[in-house]
Length: 113
Image (cartoon, rainbow, N blue to C red; front, side, top):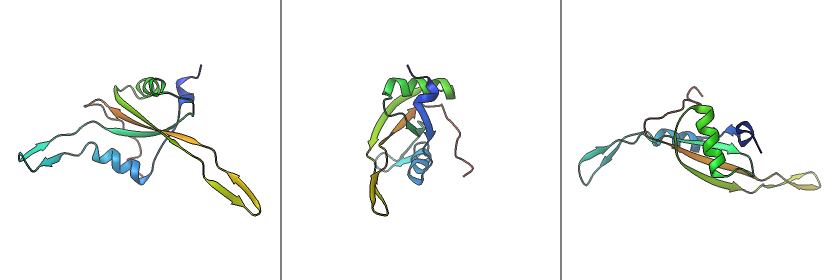
């Protein structure tokens, strides 16, 4: 049995992940009904262990950050082929999880980058 610290490896701090985090809390304007829709369900991205399932990811995020998780989406990435001179190799496969928090809960990381 893995501990919660083995499930979450690192936060994914890329332009796409930071943009998704910011857009998930930004209000949007409904042009049809002329109303402003408030969105406050923050989306976070984490690099997770290869054998971690959605339930273990949810439990790890709730325990570490003391927040409530609404939804977990998991994406598997294949490792790229790389060359080092004549030798052809491969980078290892990895897994990323998009965690959506319940409205009202926020986690502050990567805001100063």
